[in-house]
Length: 346
Ligand code: SF4
Ligand code: SF4
Image (cartoon, rainbow, N blue to C red):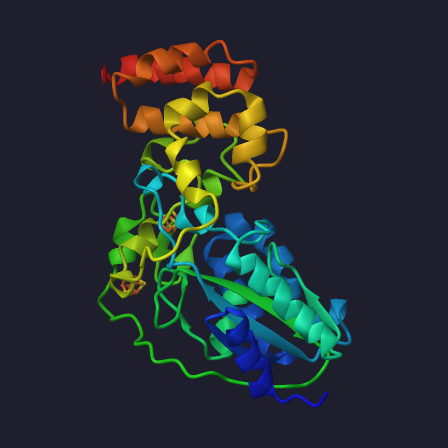
């Protein structure tokens, strides 16, 4: 089949992606310079960012790859239950990467199959991205990266990005009609609860609530920023929600599979008191950055939010958590009780 770049782009949109562009793998080279800038600004993050350099040199791992097809999927369409607003980042609530019933997952699988059926050699990484997705998407012209580091199209920043490597040198630079950030705007930086967004385009991943409630921050008792997490127990949307280009970006038009029921059954108290079978079967498959077997972490995160936004109803729940089967939860509950007394917030 003889296909040109716009055929592929149109097909991606037909399958359900919102926008699509195609760049050569060589167009990722400049990404390494941005990484170096970030590592220089935050030397404490060097070790974590070093591994990302491979994204600028895709030919080393995929010598056959010629182009990157990069697509955005708009998740601002979904209805978020009130109970979950401001506690769990919307991206994770509507995460289609592992949810086989979701439109995002099905769109991705269908498009990958289409590319393969067309005779392309294809590689992708549905979970973490095969390259630096925001950079690739910006190069492909489907949107811009704003000062809060998030990627925006005309519909705002609530987008998943997915990249597919192909072995044919196609190119399609899409059109974007998005104004850049105003020079004097710093609403996102002011909204950042931990100061992680230190300057335009400069976010320290070591102090970002999104990282500290998922990959890092395993002992919140000794985490100096724990009292700045506010209500967040998994991820953080503060710098996106504060942005004027996200005003009215969330549309609440569609149901994400199972999310309404999930929201009904979730509260800090429910998490802290729940049995580990429920956390493993209901919560972990959705909030999967916390690995299977470490479900106690949902409880310590919830206990932290209870301390940050204390209500007297929480007291018996926190006391009950001192009997939890995991030492990490018992220790966190004891510490939270001490802090409640110390901070005189009863
Ligand atoms: S996600 Fe939250 S903590 Fe991280 S930079 Fe944005 S506002 Fe700051
Ligand atoms: S809040 Fe202002 S500076 Fe930050 S990303 Fe939005 S427009 Fe840009």
